[in-house]
Each structure stands twice: as structure tokens, then as C-alpha cells.
Amino acid sequence: MTGVELPLALFLLANLAAALVRAARGPTAADRMLAALLFGTTGVGILVLLAFAGGGTPLIDAALTLALLAAIAGIAFVRRAWTQESEESGDA
Image (tube, rainbow, N blue to C red):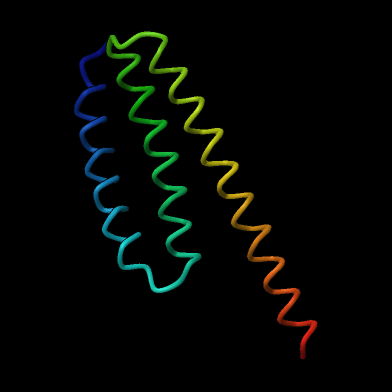
């Protein structure tokens, strides 16, 4: 442990707050989904840093779970957007 983990986690937390603002103001659903994916990746980074700083194995488990949920959410969004796009092009 080098002592730089907690400042990095705080920086990532500030990044997460900026993503929250972006998710609220996003003009399209894709912008909101990208902000949600940023939540997932930044959250994983924060949890791993905190685990490395002395939090232990439960934080790593939570980070892995969050990464899996973020990946599933991204895939679900793409599948839904792809379906809507193909339905719109089929009507024309």
C-alpha cells in the first residue's frame, strides 16, 4: 500500500459525481447509457482501490459484481436499441 489509493479513490468519486450530472442532463438515451456505463467502470475502480487500501476481499467481490451488472446493462441497451432501429427501418 503506497498511500495514493485513497486520493485516487476520491478523484474517481468526483468523476462519478460529474457522470451523475451528465446522466441527468443527457439529451439522448445513448448519452445516459454511456454515463451509466461510466458509473460501472468508475465504481469498480473505486472498490478495487479501497480493497487494496485495506478493505479486503468483500470489496473485490462487490467490484466484480458491479462489473458484471454494467456489462449486462450495456448489452441489454444495445439489443434494445438495435431492435428499435430495425423496426423503424422495416416500416419505411
